[in-house]
Image (cartoon, rainbow, N blue to C red; front, side, top):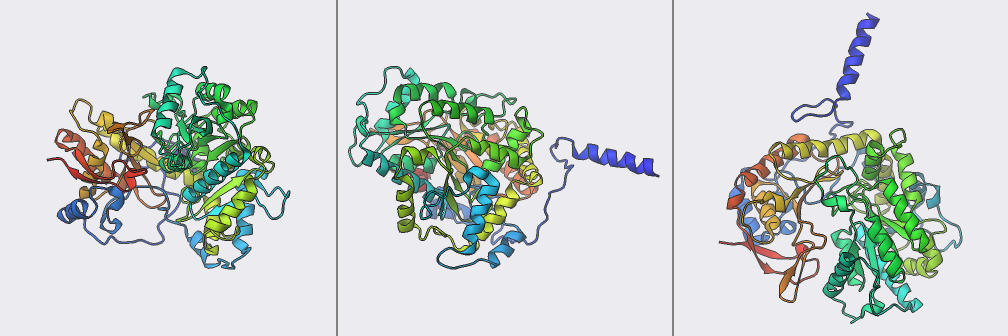
Length: 544
């Protein structure tokens, strides 16, 4: 009997180690539903959704009423997480004291536990800590670049009025194009403009940098546009370009950013080898290195899965190593914090940024108090802090990440089954449809990503155009596309919220559009074409 049981155990184990196939599931979810929420509308209400889309929302997915989406709301994975029962239980225990609530101290300890010993308070100045809490990541970005620009201006740094002659030609062209597009209200000239390079800045990060009169510069690795499914780190930074930039313009670069995972390039991960190499380059020029760390746990999962030498390390061990190479990070806790609201900016103990810019921490504390509140709550309720602490415990669990990223892989496989062009391999939080390839061989207008998202809303699903409209801009009477070019429709999957059947119904709706793509109309921009962050605010109409 024992040998028979052992036989079946071996077969069961073999089964759960199989790669998922379309329509087949070998591993159950590591969680079960504890509550459900029924829709307020029917999937068959097509005419009602058309009326809202055209007459209320102006074809803008951001303006479409969420309560009228009966299918998948894949506009964002930010703040859309279904929280766990333990998170809700912790929120009931929230301490709502105005100053120094207990959740603050629990979060400080959890930051050190999650990211490593280097991230505990440095103890240099008891009135200035290294954890700055904000109501969301966007506010942390704004604080970061507002204070940085103030400190830089106060230091009176003199910059050359011309770009270095040794810059790579394509890199120089990209910088000059960015410079010409910045609406710098203060009228700054080149000799006072700083550059913030990244593997790729996301839209709000880019917007915050531009708003402060600085240049956001994307330096994605060459592989980010390849169709090489065997290369798993297409979120990497181009090390040749960052090295060339710093060799010629180091005085113009106050810090370097790496976004993990690289959202703009399709939610693609960054390897530790690339992080380490960028750190070596920034070390040579004494420049701080920061993470945009919104999806740090997903990034660590990819490293464990695909980077040589890391398969036997835990996700937590990999996270510690990743964060060993940076001086600071900001994070939207609405992603890999698994909460509905929250953000933070964290500086490493003895950080290079505080050594190079001595007034930075103090000014950041002042800004936080003025904009958000006392540093020990930073725009969040005490119960929210408790939820974050529990969320950070869950997000590094192997079983959670296996299920999370496995669901994205199955979603991507569903689209590939119908030859719908997507970024491959799929990233950790979303599937990205390549709009240019979607319409390959079909004569189209600009902004077809807006058209697809609008028609998907009528079908009952919501996604997000992240392409020539979201990342391009209008200047001198003409459209300037993003450089490097990105033109995607992002279907971002909320954490723990949808089942595979929901996502596969989204696939079937996209298939209808793909099969009849020659009939999809273009759009007119009725309002907002010249505005900053225009994709949040614009209104469109279908061309007749």
